[in-house]
Length: 160
Ligand code: HEC
Image (cartoon, rainbow, N blue to C red; front, side):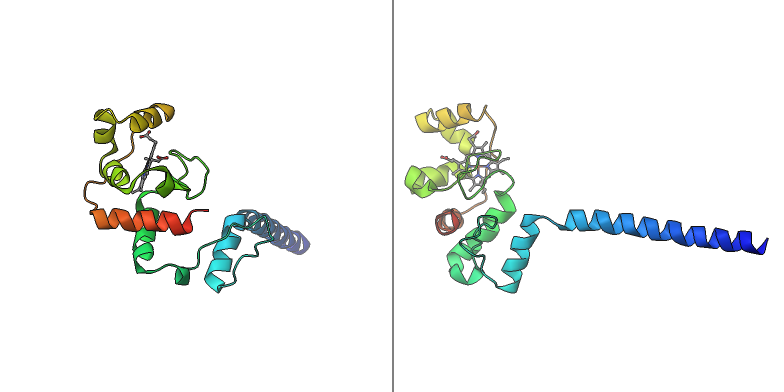
């Protein structure tokens, strides 16, 4: 009886070790992502190496002035779900080179209420809307012109 109980205990310990091993394996797999590495690099202040194609250049907070910094939070809180700062298309177009693409007044009207610009018959807006299968962009009617200018500034300095 005694040695059976010992065997049971040994088995339980073995099973426990196995489960721990599997869990740590899963944790390891999930914690390994390139995005995480960039975040670590940014938080420790080590600039990503330009010659490393695996890492995107992150904009260091110190490089942004006050206006661009305000634009950055507005952008991150409202726009990143659909727009990249680069050329990559997410739900909407990548915003790289945006300020060269459209005049500021157009961009302010668009961001405040893109549907209104489309409905006005603006050719660029209608074409873009159709190209994106008429995916509606939310209206940001609460944003002031200056808030939108700060977003545009951030897109300008952070656009890759
Ligand atoms: C739900 C997704 C979504 C969100 C959130 C969103 N957009 Fe858009 N945006 C789009 C889509 C889709 C288009 C393409 C036109 C269309 O279908 O209306 C677009 C187009 C644009 C354009 C025109 C780009 C060009 O190439 O001319 C600008 C500028 C823009 N968005 C800025 C912003 C800004 C700034 C924010 C945040 C304040 C934002 N968008 C939030 C989906 C979104």
